[in-house]
Image 1 (tube, one colour):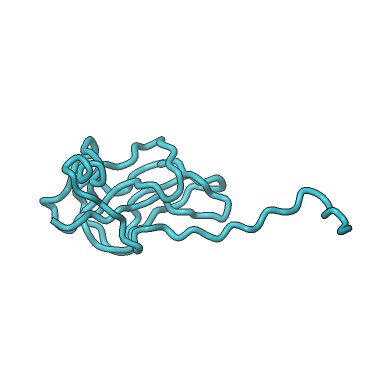
Image 2: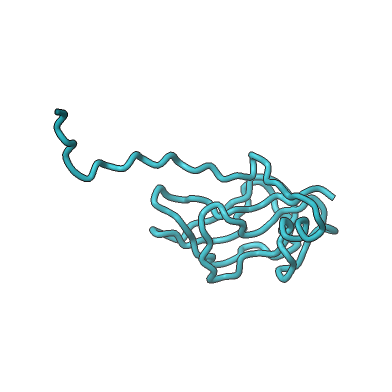
Length: 130
């Protein structure tokens, strides 16, 4: 069985640090294709669509509607085959692997890119040199 692909809370604006799941547009077990909208998320500015960028079957556990999820955290999973679909009540794949004594590492393509944070501004004038 292949590792499930993690659908993470995307950063949909420069100031977004978390989002609220407004609705799920696809149900557990639905086949999804690249570009399909799977959920709607409320950001600090608007309600926006969450698209997937690969094909598969939507699998649980999903973040519940109304849940506040930090940027980069899992909100659902995609699996390659319908036989691998897990219900919403299932243990997250990473926890299930840890329970079984296996390590579940995220691949680089699963990590959501984060913009660089600007350096903090000085709080006051620099002290004169002696």
